[in-house]
Amino acid sequence: MLRLEMRPQPSAAWSYASPLLAIALTVLIGMALFAALGKDPVAGLRVFFWEPVRNARAWSELLLKATPLLLIGLGLAIGFRSNVWNIGAEGQFVIGAVCASGTALALQGVGFAVWPLVLLAGVAGGLAWASLTALLRDRFNANEILVSL
Image (cartoon, rainbow, N blue to C red; front, side, top):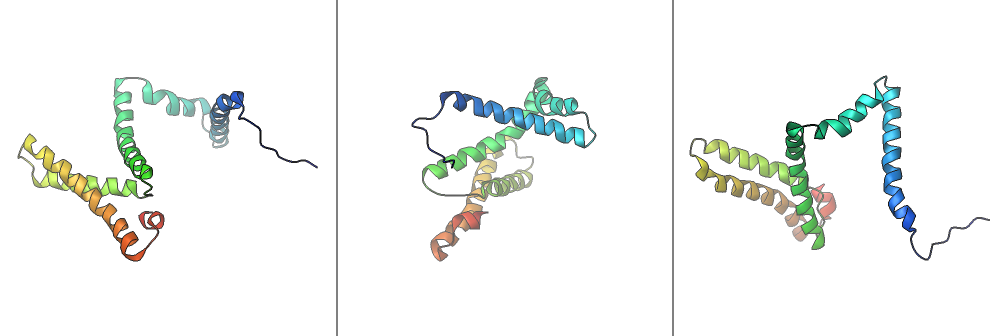
């Protein structure tokens, strides 16, 4: 009879090889899916891996799309370090962006002095959206993971 046993220490080789194996399997399965759909798999790989880094404009677009995700990840990391679970960070980001955009449109033509107000409006919008989860957790003992979802 076969039995699984824990190793005394993790394999050093597999700690490096497992991410590479995961990437290779992802690429191979992706290429198979593209081929099954009748698309050129090499062109698909080029779009995913080469197009985002091929010139300065592509890098700027990549950073434009990555910045909100980095901000959300930073906010979640701070919350997780304090044992506060929050799955609604993207919604808080969107509400903050809506509030910041509304403030910028309302104060259109004022000039660069409006930037601090726009930033504060974004923070206040995200804070207000997150406070709904905190209120439901504190007042009604609701699960913050489900409520922020």
